[in-house]
Length: 243
Image (cartoon, rainbow, N blue to C red; front, side):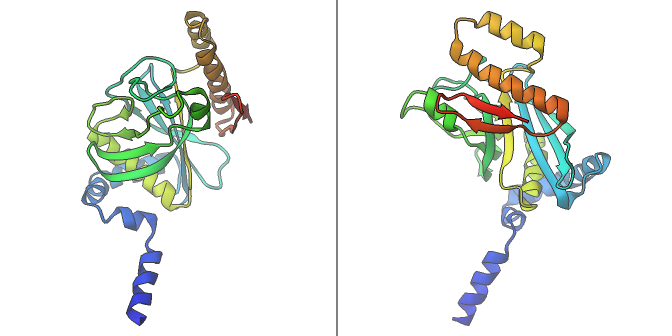
C-alpha cells in the first residue's frame, strides 16, 4: 500500500514538461533547440518561467507567427515567424471532411503528440463551435495539426527542424500554466486593402465574408493593442470579437 501511494504521488508530481521529456523526440528537440529558444526569449526580455504564447497563421503568406510575453506583461511581442512549407485547398474555411481545406478561425492547441507520424505535432481544436454550426453535420473531419514533415491534407506543416523549436515553446508555455494556447488561422494578413480584395473576389460567398469580417476585427485589435481580443461564438456561427 505504501509503495502504491508513493508511486501515485510520484506520478501526480510529474510536470507537463517532465511527462513530455519521457519521449525521445522531445529530448532530442531540447538538445537541438533549447539554447536558441533561450536566446530568443532573452532578446525579447521574456522569462522562461513566465512565458505565455499566441500563434497566428496566414494561409496566403504561408507563415506562422509566434508571439510571446511574460505572464505579468500586458502586450505580446513577435518572437519568430515560421514558414508553412506545404499547403492544400484554397482560401476559405474548412466545412467538411475530405475537402482538403486548412481551417480558418479562432482556435487553440488541444493536443501534444510527441510520437507523431510527422515527427512532432500540435493539435488544433478543429472543429470549433462555429465549424460545427456552419459545417456539414456529422462530416466535419478533424485531426488538424501544426506538424513537421512538409506534407499536408488540411494541416499546417513546417520543417522538422522548426517544429522542434515551436513544440518546445508550447511545452514551456503549457508547463507555466497556460491551459489554452490560442491559434488564429487567417486566409491572409487582413489589411484594409487585402480585406477589400477578398470581399470583392468572393462577394457572392456570404459565409466566407462573414468569417473574414470577424477575423479582420480580431486582426486589427491585436495589431493595434498587441493584446488578445475576447472571442465569443454566436448561435449563427459568427463571432463576437471585442477588445
